Length: 208
Image (cartoon, rainbow, N blue to C red; front, top):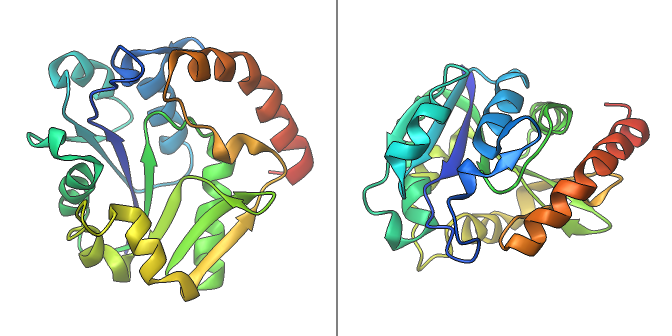
């Protein structure tokens, strides 16, 4: 049995105007940062789904022992990348963490979610801030088949959460870090400015 992760990094970054995985983040790029945090969180297997500008992103993603897969149909939407990533996850995975590359998350947050998934026996575990659900999502291995079958018509991961709503475990966090999502240049610049403060507050308040 293993715990895996799917890092989605295939999108065209239309609103951002440049590939999100390649954006500077701290002393590295966004994808390098996130792969480092995923590797440090105790995961056994990390799958990175590439698509748009795959050849530019590939050298930076070839770290932390991650396995790279390419979604040639990335223009079909995020669900297509999730299917490709889920197909690469080992069949015996007991849990799968799903994260987008434009949602930077620190290792202590990832560890807490994985612990909560293991403790509670829920099919799906999500972080929350003041009642709002954030990311990443941790899905039990029992739903790996569902992940491999998601499509845009069924709203992808969101549809999976809706269908299994009674078995979702919510894990509250003390800061809006779990809601951080970088879609536009303005959101990106604001996040670069605020991230250190949010990270410090998360550590102090949660004891992670």
